[in-house]
Length: 163
Image 1 (cartoon, one colour):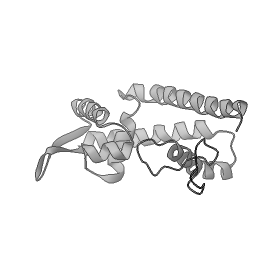
Image 2 (cartoon, rainbow, N blue to C red; image 1 turned 180 degrees about the vertical axis):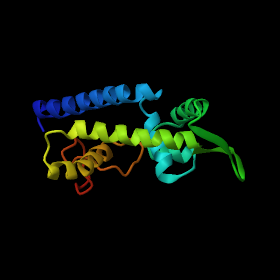
Image 3 (cartoon, helix red, strand yellow; image 1 turned 45 degrees about the vertical axis):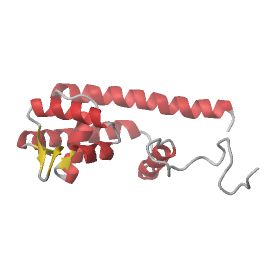
């Protein structure tokens, strides 16, 4: 890939990321939420109560970020935290009734954001988009050593003989 193509790809991804985050911030603000907190609420709605460390892994964010979000959401009455049975060092996070109600509103906002984001794309493209985006995310995932690397990346490939 030459620089012009790499620049176009990287700039498009950067711009989408910035604008997507700014738009979700606008949508969440009237509900007293900040970007990232909605993902935590949605994950708990999907899975039920989770240990904070598991929540960190599921969300793909650092543990201190989950701790901070959980404290704020707990103070607002949206989640409850308690010690895990059998491991006082682990903290279980679960939605409160108010958190479940808020999550229903967040789901509606999430639909609005997705519809705005894919406006003008064909149904086929929209159907393929989650898989494509997951592949892109996996390609640059620094948390897991088994991530897929671009064959065009500098350095030897596994099938290359040693020099």
